[in-house]
Image 1: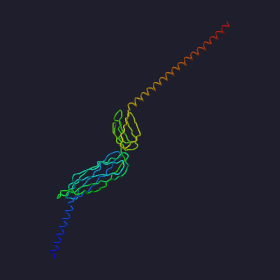
Image 2: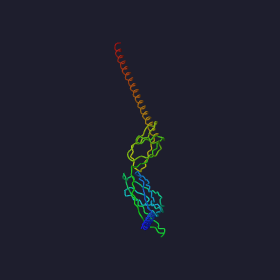
Image 3: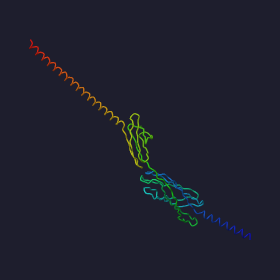
Image 4: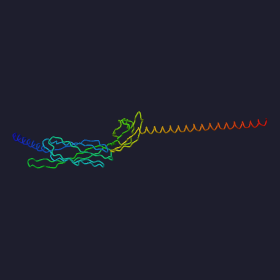
Length: 268
């Protein structure tokens, strides 16, 4: 009786071991994805790690297919094919997510479908396909525009919203929205401009400080010339007034002498 029990127990253990081996021989895949932050008007990668977790069998002809359901957002390529993932190993692949400048801000989600096959070495055939589905998340954040800023002369200090960012010439990445740009120099002074930046757009700003100085100098010269001309005209008018006054005085004097002469002649 005891011997029969031992034999039954032994047979049961053998069946359990054979079942474990047969189950373990089937490949099982699992996957995980990164959670990227993507600026509007830019492209960012999302990374996918695919792992064979069965331990003693390989997966073949793997195809990863991503899906995104948001407007103004695209993911490429349409699929990635992997010939084989050996048992217990991890393969890392990536897709590009392109968020347009009009993409809606916030957290988004998508799905990746992974299809694969097992290989029956005894019959030399592929078995399957099997499919797993994994969700992934990503976040759309405010984008940036590029401002190419230059000046004459060079090496002007550049400030964005009061913060120093470098000297001209310089390409400055600026967050979308309204901002104040300022070019500053101890010699030439300051130039400020209010700008509106849109995600994914390029802008140019050039300021010729030396030309501005020439204009100011020429205006000063013109003012000086006009002032001198006005002064000379006033001086000329003053001279004319003085000369006319002398003539009037001489006329009165001459008239007085004539009157005195007439009265004196009658007496004598």
